[in-house]
Picture (cartoon, one colour):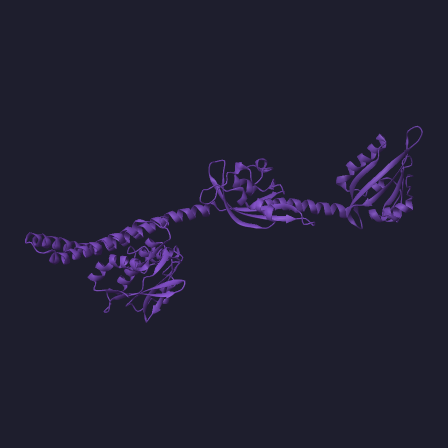
Length: 497
């Protein structure tokens, strides 16, 4: 293939400025494009070599001239970029190439070359460089951890926050995959976080966003960083997976606070339960003492009846009275046992709602009797529900106690319990002779720590705990007005079996 030879006019048509420099006479010859490129008027051009040097930017002049002289001396291509200060165009970036012709004796005769404007290219390159600098600055200033992973799940880039949160250096992170066993990740309950549940492999596998996945990462210092991860798959124009952006925030403080709150809530629940037991103590003692008195009295009576040779027909009714009193004590003790279990110990079970209401009423009848409060449980057919039995009886007892305190100073003092079947649930209405609760209080009374009692007179957790107890059984607890009186409603799921 023959080389293509370009004339000066051809080069000018292509946007190049052509020049030549007669070295022995120190004369320059510029094409019209050269004057336009450098912003020099032809009338001001004296044709001397100095005319070119005068256009160079002061900061570039020494290095550019040195390159020019070096190319002449070493007989190499003059290849340089430099800035010029144009009187009409201002600062411009110029690229130049030139080659020297030599005499037979090796003396430089003439250098011929071309110049062209690269200002737009340089400015664009500077902008891109600035963008990269800004991107790196923003990338590393983020408080959120940010990791870029390739389709093989390997980490290829990470920011400073990611390295701090994970307690790893950049070198330790790069190349590691999400499934690396060194992560030793755990779930909230402390169990191992298996690879199949990891958001990044899931994002690679499904091609879908994996959002807000909670994970505990064991740090080198022995601590655990709890992070909430979001994995975002990105695709190229051919819809092939390009990479995965993995962002995460450190929620360790929030998790620690949550666990601390759970621990404190358990303590408060326990204290509230003890408070309820304390309030019941005198009433329970009275309830047990009455049947015990009957039992001891009847035993003494039977002893004399046997001694006197009374027939069995006369003794049997007294034995039945002892049996009834013993059953009454057993029911009270059974009710107290419900307070020995915590929410975690409780299991959802099928039970007779009638028995639970009787057990709860047995624990408070003594206190109600002392205050002259009537408790009526409307007769209803046997109803079986599914729920956490001990938590439900605690809730019913708490509602009885609230009613007791609300009506004990009223002229009419009563508590009424009745049921309504509303498939697939049953509604338990616990009403009292109170005239209702104001809206300002009813809107807040289910909130933790809200109380209308004086400081030191209550925890403010009774209704909040009761609500949680009922919800743990898949039910609901709420307040309403019924027949112009105060009423709390418990909804529980009817047993499916």
